[in-house]
Length: 550
Ligand code: DHE
Image 1 (cartoon, rainbow, N blue to C red):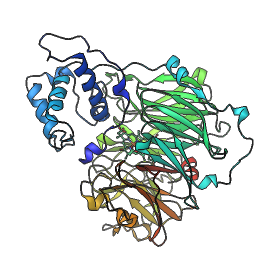
Image 2 (image 1 turned 135 degrees about the horizontal axis):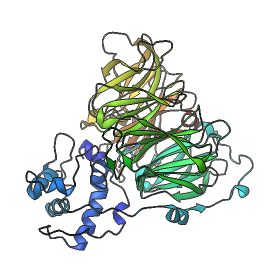
Image 3 (image 1 turned 45 degrees about the vertical axis):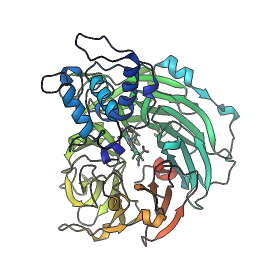
């Protein structure tokens, strides 16, 4: 796989939706209904993540027929582009063997036609999918298991459509739970009792961690493509609401935090923040929950808007709409939890929102290509004071942004330092308030020696001048997996900040593992292997996720 191909939406269920060829025009390429259905399926699985379902473009170029049929493009151009790819990130689907010649030909013809719009997914569909498996009154009134819930790790088993709940103290797998297809992330309710998981297919599963073993108590589908889920955290609203964001249809939904009953669906369709031109597919990327107000912070990718959604009265919903930057993706809080930093990744910027004042305070150019912080990493730099860090997908740089406008006003919301890690293709960066180490992965780097390792920096030795020294941890080698080319992805700390966990992410047919490293000594502490650990990717420590510690 090329790095870009590895980051494709390779597992959606959108393609299974039946679509009709939209109004054929004269001279349109010949395409049977059967071919159109097949091509739509392939497009949704492989192309929509970057180019958008309606082909309006995001990380990838727009591909609407006015452009694909223009004199300088057309069938041959498209066929070559799909076959050979481009240095800008388009995968070489043909020469890599992922699509055969006949399929490339079909896809080139398909792109000359109007894109079909998948069906909407509103309240009737949502309610029909909603299952209250165990009613609140039938749930345990106290914790029935002996699990130390705060140190539990919820591990995404991507291709199995499951999560593994692993005890952070004993490394024992406490439960394997079926969730959505190609499950994406886990988040935790403010009380710490309920775990919420969302799959790419838009299925949300709510798991009661008090049960023995922990088990789902409710589920719902909130759209046909989704990535984000969060719960209300403000004082007085603990466990009251959950919110999920969809890619298709572009919308978010506020649900009852005890039952997942859908309460309110809000479309994110509207105008792009700067051009003020309508966009039909502004997807909901990351969502976080404010600690300062009863608000959800909803990041809308294509319109570049950050919505501060006040959940104190959802019948009279108030929303602050912040003009930020296009292609908002992932982000997290600074160490005080007052400021939220989110990457507008295709624009090379990080937007900073003050969640106390409900205002944009800065748009910071990171100096690197395609910042991808996950939730980022907060630490106190010996010279620059409190900083938040991001790594990059497009190059090897790590950028540190000052986050202390009171104590270090000259550094606030500026890139105070930037230095190289192992290589491009980084997705996640992590530290912990009790750690002196900063960990940077590079799972999408084309070099196996880089994607199988992780870079560590000693925070206490960081200076004003010169790049900090890199210590390389050979995580895949430590896992003892020799077969295939597994990638190391997403560092995550245990509750007390003494260990850091890495996923060794192999193919579904190959062995994977979780490698636990002692944060003080940087020595291998434990390799967790089990037949059931299929394609582990994200890991979410209950305490750190709930409290936004990173
Ligand atoms: Fe993710 C977070 C979207 C591919 C692993 N991913 C997110 C978030 C979004 C997102 C919007 C933020 C959620 C939040 O905080 O509310 N991811 C997408 C995509 O659109 C993309 C590029 C393509 C796709 O089709 O899904 C994509 N993501 C991947 C992967 O290929 C990864 C590496 C492996 C996997 O499991 O699929 C992956 N994404 C993750 C992880 C997080 C995440 C582990 C949470 C990180 C965290 O620490 O919070």
